[in-house]
Image 1: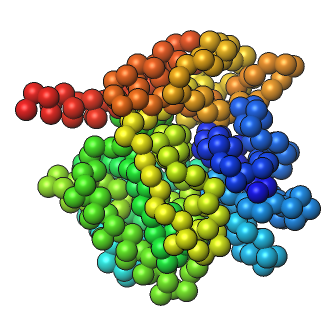
Image 2: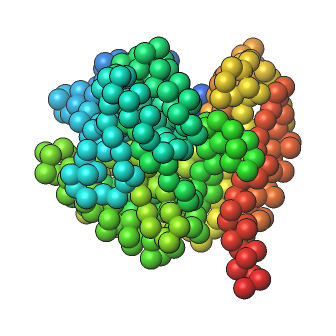
Length: 432
Ligand code: AMP
Ligand code: GLY
């Protein structure tokens, strides 16, 4: 099979890496890819958002299956375009992508189909939003409706901060049309976990749970990023809670999509808050694999990824058995450029990659990297994800951090506390 992977981050490197191990896969193309992906796939200079070019490329190059990494092409309707032309693609259609592309739509959908989520209000005019804030209690979460590259959610501690957020989103139009409406919702306390399922709209296979570290600084402080590290499994999601996720989240979600006439073939990604008392609430839905979540999920997947995605795209997911997972814990430590998620410099030489190439049960997933004059250089805020897996979480972390020391570039920054909640849990467990 000839496969095209759309995107060029760590998630896409992990997808290409796993697909390249499949006996079904003959050749992989990646658009646009990055310096690491280039060792496993032919990278083509087409951006993920250039959906017409991608459709033409897939037709002219006899691509059997296209796998979409990021949300932007899904929201732009890449799946509808491929389907109209009879080409197979893994990822939901434009309407399905509204689950991520419009927080207003997603919240209304959750209420309609009884999926647990935080209480909220929707605003289309700044005046009404300011009036609401005068009577609100704090902290309060202000969310721009549309896609905002992970920056559209602001946790406001006071009336002043919330008013600033409303002004920024609705009046300064910081995210353009994405800020024409906004959602304000109750701030929830608890522990976050990312849950995933692959579906063809009928059959639904939940994947292993992952915990992501979104904040830039240790102790989960500072502004949110795309994710500074992750680990799987995530012990916060007990077996009992996993069952609850299936019953209270995935089942009503699929029922709702069907009722709305949305033929969803792709990944559903729920960002959940496990609140005290083991209750769960959906903070957001995404319509793709998480990044860095995919970088720990895929190394734990023991079964073949290719038939899973292929049959989901064809609407025949029931023909493949549910995915199988290794007992290993996988961890990923993200190396970022100094300044991220704000301004940062690019083009710094990356050294030491050869020092970790022989490490067993590890993978270096490139994100913002490029080739320049025979060197691998930084080309983004998140530069790479260092993944290691082992039956012991501690061993896996030691290995990932050893790699983080050996790989160097000017301005390298990484969090040194990835997995701390799980480590704490196992320490508590040992004492008990
Ligand atoms: P979202 O894109 O809606 O998942 O929001 C991004 C991040 O903001 C989440 O991963 C949480 O860390 C935080 N967040 C969003 N909604 C809430 C909420 N209702 N209560 C507390 N934190 C939230
Ligand atoms: N790591 C969170 C996301 O992919 O949205």
